[in-house]
Image (cartoon, rainbow, N blue to C red; front, side, top):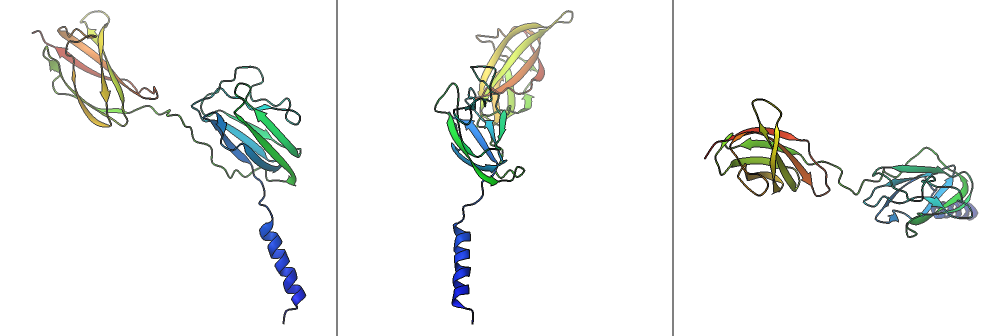
Length: 240
């Protein structure tokens, strides 16, 4: 039979183990939408915090407040911080205490880091790298095809495919047998996901549709102003 005193001692140890707070860890924090993703951070001694600018707003700094964080600044050379999407700033904390930080432009963008006196793990990174909240991927413009490479005075049909909604621009350059190409105007369409069918080379406000041979340069631009690589087609407009 197990003595009652031993059972009680084991039970107490188990209870203490379950009640013990989990250790802190290195943290990855997103700055965007005018806030930190976690404004109340806890790390152990020797661990670090890395901030990532994820947007869409990027004019934020990580600037230390007194007393513990004086002199710490992600943007020490300017009073007007401006970062690119994906920029990062890392700080290691080797002294216990509480550290407060505020953006030098936006006081609402702030947070506090509490550093314990327990030695931590400076290597592990349990947090994923924060994802950008801004679309940086250019749309894909594919599947270009003309119903007829020789258009009449009302133009011809152009087919193209997009992987996201956006505008498609066509710039027309008149081709001469001798000499450089001459800019002749443009056309533009709203495109949807999938295949699109539009009329190209018809006379309009920004293109006169005069007979001749043309090089047409097409680009797609999405709602985040990302622009695809240029695609080129050749067509001719015959006289009326």
